[in-house]
Amino acid sequence: MCLSVEVSRYRLNRLDPFWFAPGMMIWMLFLMPLLHHAGANGMLEPWFESKGLVDANQVLAYFAVSKLGEPPVDGKTDTNPEGLTAAFGNWAPAVAARLHNGGLSCKVLDKEPFQKQMLEKLIWIAAFMLVGARHPGATVGAVEKEYRSEVSSLIAELAAVAAAEKGLTFEEGIEERLCAYSRTVAHFPTAVKEFKWRNGWFYSLTEKAVAQGKPDPCPLHTAWLKELKVV
Image (cartoon, rainbow, N blue to C red):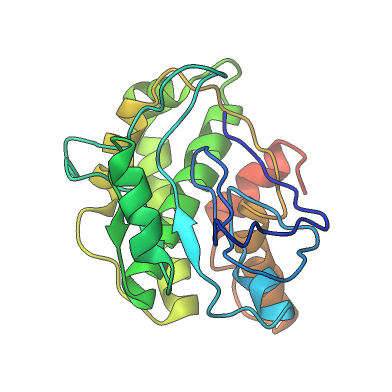
């Protein structure tokens, strides 16, 4: 459903000081040095930290390009008509300007607001893909309409553990925001993929808690991963 990115020894053009790849929820790095493997469409904070890139410039892209040659569909929803795409860092204004010139929305955010929005998107992809995988053939739209109680429970669980882990508070209405986004990509298929970058982050919190003799903070998430034999 989304474009994944693998960067291997890619040098950025000095005349174009940021690297850009279109897709859904892609974290883009604006780095002049050579880059090694970078995952996309998920939680990259641990990878950034391991490379000493905690304050790397990033973009959370909520626009989709279904196939080559077609115009991108902007990530605007009925709860966020201003658009969900956001950029953070020194190059954020330049990125936003280019997207605006292309007819797409983009907000420039400080680090904490950006992190909250990133986590919401992570929760969205982890929750909707997992619930959909429990119901073979279910699209994102079917999950939102037909399995709303399941995905609502999982969103609440993952949001609570993410907030506790990062020491932040999400604004009210996270479930409705994520469901509103789902309605804009209702035709997308569901599957648990790129586990390390998506559901894997939440499962790592489960493993950490269990290793410390504490209760699993994501029992529903863990149970459904085991049901699907993902873990």
